[in-house]
Amino acid sequence: MNGVTRWLTRLGASVTGGIARLGFATRFFIAIVRLSGATFARPQLLLREIYQAGVLSLIIILMSGLFIGMVLALQGYETLVRFGATESMGMLVALSLVRELGPVVAALLFASRAGSAMTAEIGLMKTTEQLAAMEVMAVDPIARVVAPRFWGGVISLPLLAALFSTLGIYGGYLVGVRLIGIDAGAYWGQMSAAVDWKYDILNGVIKSVVFAVAVSLIAVFEGYDATPTAEGVSAATTRTVVTSALAILALDFVLTVIMFRGGAG
Amino acid sequence: MNRKIIDLWVGIFVAIGLAALMFLALKVGNLLTFNEDRRGYELEAHFENIGALKPRAQVKSAGVVVGRVESVRLDKTTYEAVARLHVFPEYQFSRDTIATVYTSGLLGDQFIGLEPGGDPVMLKDEDRIKKTQSAIQIEKLISQFMFNKAQETPAPAAAPATGVKP
Image (tube, rainbow over all chains, first blue to last red; front, side, top):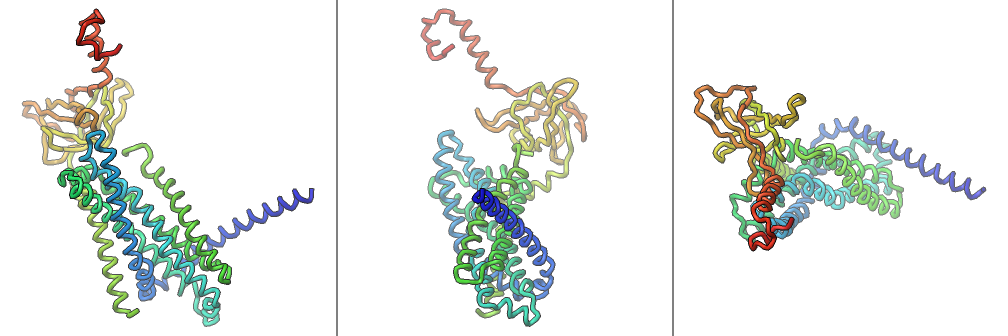
């Protein structure tokens, strides 16, 4: 009986703990949005964060995009050639990149490259009591440290996702047209005939904006909420990557159902 | 890191990011033809059967894209399929135009073909195309073909019929 009670107590504690954390995260998000006026009033802080999150992620995003586009073209060719439909390669590569792979893979890479760095930075600031020192000096750490990083991530990721898709389409062109020898006119023509800028591209951009908000919020929240020890910071960094990846994939499913259910229309 | 260099890099990053978005919208997504799409006029065509025609399918005349299919619905009283066609403004079609549902290739996408007639009066916005031809259903063709074959050669020993299984 005692064991059952203890088990129930532990279950209740984990549920209330989870709800409290969710509530804290929501209040934290509201605080970031409320205090972000200060961020945009001092663009230098924001520029530094865009540099950290966006420019330094460029290499990995561009290289991954190029290679994913090339692999898509090779694998797509293997399948399309059976149906004698290799001209549709451009459509295949562009639609898979713009709708799914661009936003999702760019967000996953961004979470592991920039999100983890944000968490570690903020977590370490908390551990070394820099955040507490700011509060003592009447500087709100959310306005000075958290909000610029959040907005830096939100601005950078959609641009990175667009670059990812563009490089992927170019990679598909390199392999499909230059290596395999599909007609270049068919590659670009089928692509622009099949891709609708509103239905496909705008929805892809909306996806990457949603992912950007989710990943940036998770990254700054985990850093701010980290246990102020060396172990705590490392655990928070791990949690950022894991939670971001799960959030991206779950959100992707929900968004895809809303945007693309039931074929065209 | 020097402030100027950070500014420069962020500028480069944002510029190429926006350029990538422009490339996707213009070159890949054909934003320009989409804008053109909004002008033009709407026609309606009733078909007995439209096969697998979908919204956003092409409307072609002599192989040239002249519009898109806006929507497809079922008429509640006649049980015919009603396709709403959006035709680009530069193309006018005569009142006795024939609309046919075609398939590009054997298994490709379906589209609507318009063959203009000789009537001097042109179709206007919200007009209905009166002469239509339904989609060719491959299943029906095959069953018809097999039915004919079976009637032609009642004796199963006939050599040309070996490829066809009942």
